[in-house]
Every structure is written in structure tokens, then in C-alpha cells.
Image 1 (tube, rainbow, N blue to C red):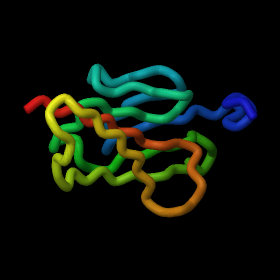
Image 2: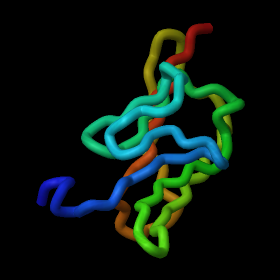
Image 3: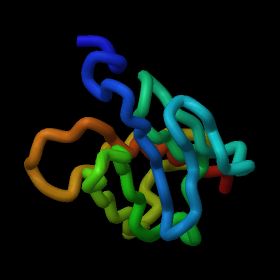
Length: 107
């Protein structure tokens, strides 16, 4: 099933608080660490402690459908120059969008 078939005429938006990060396939935030991958999955590179918080994936229907992902920075466990890929899911419901975090530590 294509993204057009899945979302129809609705727009998928990623938000953090009231700040819109992406709308559809358009990146709105000026933060160069944030991008969409594989369609509508949000990726944050070089995650920092101030990135902690709630990220909302929302489809703009009459009654908006949304999923909230909570990012908690627990510890920095990757070594120098290593990359760590984290996939966050708040519960076991099927998701139409995923928050991906790529941590690049330079110690």
C-alpha cells in the first residue's frame, strides 16, 4: 500500500510541543539534525539532552489522530565515534509513524 493510499488527502505532521517539525514530506524546522526517512518516519541525529520530551505524530483528520512518543535520555552508552539507533514506541499499538534517533557521540 502506498503512502497516498494510506493517508489519502490527509497530511501527517510531526510536532514537538507546539512547534511543527514536518508537514507531509516537507521539513519545517530549521534544525539540520531532523529529517524524514522512509516516508514519514522522523529521524533525529546527534541526540542531545535538550531533545528529551514528547514528539507527536498527527494526521489532520476532522478529529486529529495522533500518537505521542516520549524521548527520555537515560545514558550515553555508545563509545567514541560509534552510532546508536533507537526506535521508540510508547506501547504495542501498530504505528503509522516511528521516531528514529541516531546518536553520534564525539567525546
